[in-house]
Image (cartoon, rainbow, N blue to C red; front, side, top):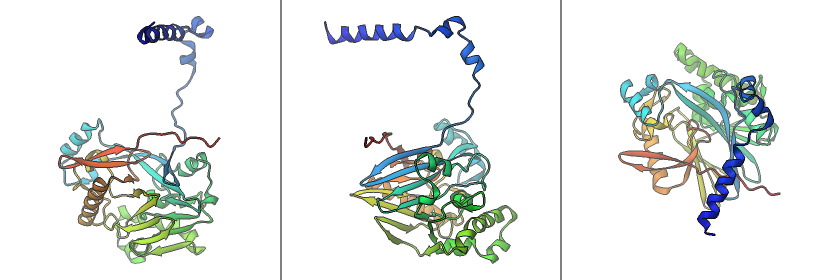
Length: 331
């Protein structure tokens, strides 16, 4: 018997098997679906991968609807919608908020914390995702903030208490100085005052316990982890690089927000960028470097888990998500 014949016999056998309905379905085929409500929720989100000897866990804080057509600069509303449509999207575009946990073997480092209650009810799930991944807030040794917008530091608090009571909180001193300044708060527009108030509220319990440490520009933290200054989105916006055994992953923070638009058109900025020109230049540099060297990148607002690579495509770039892999169990 040929291999093809064996395959066809197996396929016929399988088809016959799956058409046999259980007893309840034979009696009333509509009963099961009709009496079961829609779940209307998803499970906690985490994704694990190895980077050399390090374990990296992407943590989902949730998603929210971003009105990209109102916020992006350098492209008409019509062209924004057309570019989104190429990726079968529209505006408002559903946008992920991601945090990342690095297990070096010596310490647990969390990069950004999600929004907690500062950004609406569809976010604030990072701690739940962290627990689902097998950790709790007490275990975190260090928290590195890419910047101090509410969807990146709001998760420092859990119902008003420190979510990471044993952690050192690190951020570029320029961002600390800017967002904690009384003068800047007073001068901010009513629409932006909440950004300053959110930063103050989230950091206060850690400041009171001397757990906040500023750094200046590009800084080495040991264990193959370093910060690189990427000022523009905020005055102290930082990206973090993690390297282990020749493998490299760059955590971009908010270098970009809307993948479907800003990869093919890197010059498009967003209203959230404090310095539009600097943010554009930082994005250009990051894209060029990542495409040329081929290392992994992670973005706070790339579709979860937000890890992948980029490559040149025409006059812009193309996002290539990481190929999904389930870690092998040690058992």
